Image 1 (tube, rainbow, N blue to C red):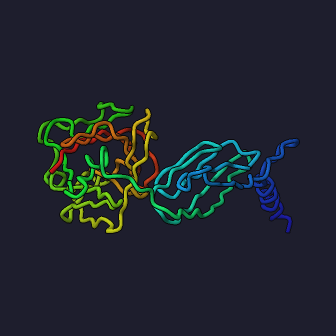
Image 2: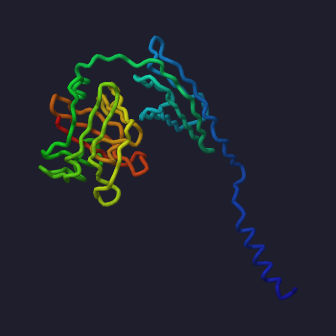
Length: 269
């Protein structure tokens, strides 16, 4: 046994070294309880007010179940289309993160006349399709809103698989992406890959919620218009009878928000 005593000593020292270090006098708090309340805005059954009741949280994140998110402790969200929406709230403190969800049922769809912006975007009874412009700047990308440092397409600067894509906003809330079987994959060398867009996509118009107060187009989570990594929430920069310019935040392959901004330009087909 004597000749093994030095091995045992090393093992003891090693085990002691592997014990977690704990500094006296520091106690981390428990993760917060992600409790929240919601209610309809008085007199409006399509607007929901949410408010956190997690008293010790300092980082708040809401997923409203319609493509919109928020980092405010209290917020109001507009649901113009009838249906059930799951609101998920996450809150963090020094002890970790808590998450909870509740379902909100919207019993009515807001009746909006097909005029103004809606007529320009959808064509109402005369269905309108949007395709990329062949002019310069069809796609612009940069590190800041509306910047072009990273990329700005020249005249006829896109590939055929982008020019043959079309997008339709139906007045009933349906969104249709026609890609002729192929879509450009920005995460694997910008090559054309087979992709079948979902057949049940919708779109929502959100008034005044853009980066600097613009109206917005909101698509289902992980959907996109024009460029796969351009996100699903778009500021309407310009909309006329024949032109549509949108601005959005770059997204990663897992649909999380990335770093950078897109401007994409379309013309009516």
